Amino acid sequence: MFANSDTSFQIVKSSKGTNKLSHDGYLYIFNREAIKKEWRCDVRGCKARIHSVDETIIKKSGEHSHPQEYGKDEVTVMVDLMRKRGRETNDNPHVTIGEMISLLSESAKSLLPNQQALKMMHQRQRIAPPNPVSLEELQLDAENNKTFSNRNFLFYHSGIGPNRIVIFATKENIEILPCQRYG
Image (cartoon, rainbow, N blue to C red; front, top):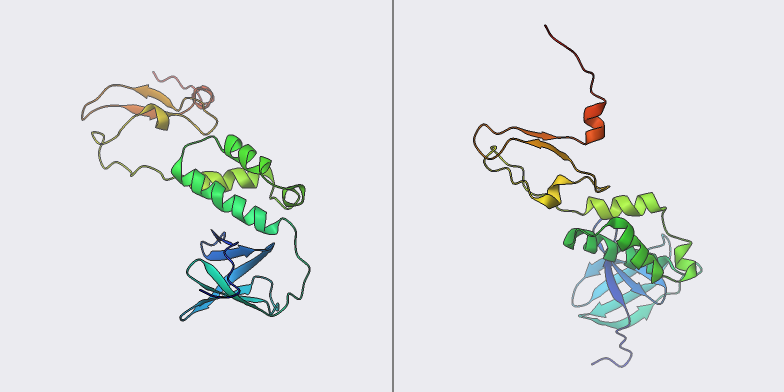
């Protein structure tokens, strides 16, 4: 198709949900589209550009005005994959983060956000079930009766019916409620 075509790049989602192109250790932001897509380096003021058609780079122009940040593109790809996994599975965030970190180079590991930030990124992607309108619609399956730290959250359930009583709380939270006696 094109004499200087190159397919060694990856499209990932940024933290704001926009597409970024990862190629040769640099990240590029989508700039504009006509017949071909134009991507510009994500560092402000840098003149480096890539032009692509479909899944192929057809032209590179400009020079980077900054050194390559080794691992930055790896971290962006890993965070994108971690977010996807958070949306698609209910895996424990620590397991997902551990698996993803094991795939990174040492230079990329040094650029990672802290563990708590990674855990929150993963958890924010989880899709919550729709809110029930009535007690009859309330589904109490085992998966949704646990906290993120895997503690029981369904304290009491009287049974199915229009007048059912459901109490959501951990045992520890119930124990700290003040006890008052009336009478």
